[in-house]
Amino acid sequence: MRLLTLLKPELADWAVLALPDARTGVLRLQGGEAVGFTATVPLATIAGTRLDRLLRTGNTDVTTDARDPALAGILPQPLLRGELLALGLEQLLAVGLNARGATLGALLLARRGGFDAEDIEFATRLASRAAIALDSARLYEERGQIATVLSGALRPPSLPDVEHLRLAARYRPAAEHIDLGGDFYDVLGSDRDWLITLGDVCGKGVVAAAATGRTRQSIRTAAHFDRHPAALLRALNSVLYEAGTDQFVTVLCARVNVAADGAHADVELATAGHPAPILLRADGHVEHLEIFGAACGMVPGIEYRTISLRLHRGDTMLMFTDGVDEAHGAQGLFGVDRLLALLPAFAGAAPDVICEAVEQHVVEYVDGRPHDDIAMLAVTCGS
Image 1: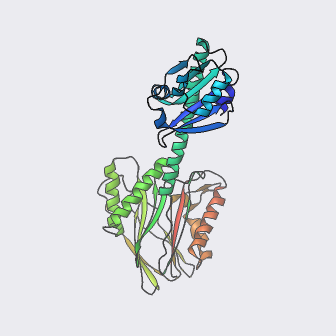
Image 2: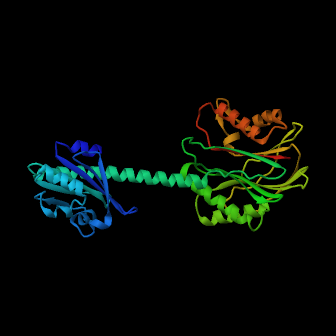
Image 3: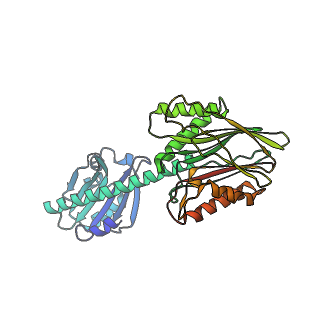
C-alpha cells in the first residue's frame, strides 16, 4: 500500500497491484483511485489473457488507449476497470514484478498524458525493487511458518502421568526469543516400565534443533526394540555415526521400573558423555553418581555400561544438561558443588519445586550473561 501511495501523483494518477496466489487460486488486486481498495478474482478467469501472459513472462505491457474494450484482458475487475474508464486516463502501463528469477505479480499504472520511455524505465526499476521487497517478505513469512512448525514438533513434550512416580522438567533455550535449542528430554513407556532420556546436541539454534528432532526420533524407534539403556545408546551411536555429520550428542538414559506398591523404583542408568545425575534422598543426603561413556556419533562401535540404583519413596533423581553446571557467572562456573549444596534444603519437596529452585539459582548466578541451553528433569519416587 505504501508503494501505491508513493506512486501517486508523481508517476501515475491511478495504480493497482496485481498479486496472484497459486495456493488459493485467486488474483488479489489492490489500489485503484482509492489506494485501500482490495478485490480478488479467480485466477482461472484470466487464463490466456494479456494479464495472464504478463504474470507468466514478467514483461512490460503498454495499452495505448485505456478506453479500449480490450482492457478487460489486462484488468479483470469490473469496478477498477470502470473507475479507470471514468477517469479518462489515456494509457495503461503494466510492469512485471520480477525478483530472483520469478514473477510475483504486476504493477498497473495509468496517467493522463501517458508514459514516455523514461517513465517506463523508471517504473520498471521501481517495480524491480518492489518485487525484491515483496519476495523478501514472502520468504520471511514462509520461514516464520517453518519455524512455527519446527517449534511445535521439536518443543519438549508434555510429561506423562506415571503411577507412583512424580516427574517435572524445565527447559530454557539459550536464545530466549527462540523456543528451539539443542537440549531435549523425553519420557516413554507403559505400566511400570519407563524410559527417561535427557540429552544435548552440539550447537545452537535451528540446526541443533533439527538434529534434536532426529535424535529423539531415533531414541523412540530404538526403544521399541530394546529399552535397555546401554543397547539404546549403542543403537543411537550407530545411527548418528553412519549419518556422517559432524554433530555429536550427549545423552543420559534411565530405565525406571516402579514397584507395584510404589515403595521403590529400580533404575538402570547409562550415559553417552552426559553429566551424571544427582540423587537427593528423602533424608537430605545427596550423591553425585559416577558413570561415564563417550558421546554418540563420534566413533563407531562404542560399548556403554550401566549402573543400577534404587529410589525409595521420597527420593529424587535430578538429571540436567551442562547448561546448569557449566553456567558462567562472576565467580566462574556454577558447578556441581553448588548443586550439591543447594539440594538438601529441598529434600522431600515436589520435583517441580526442585527444578524451579535450580533454574532460579542458575539464572541469578549468570546475572544476564549469555548462557547455554538449560534442561533438567527430576524423577521422584512415590505418588
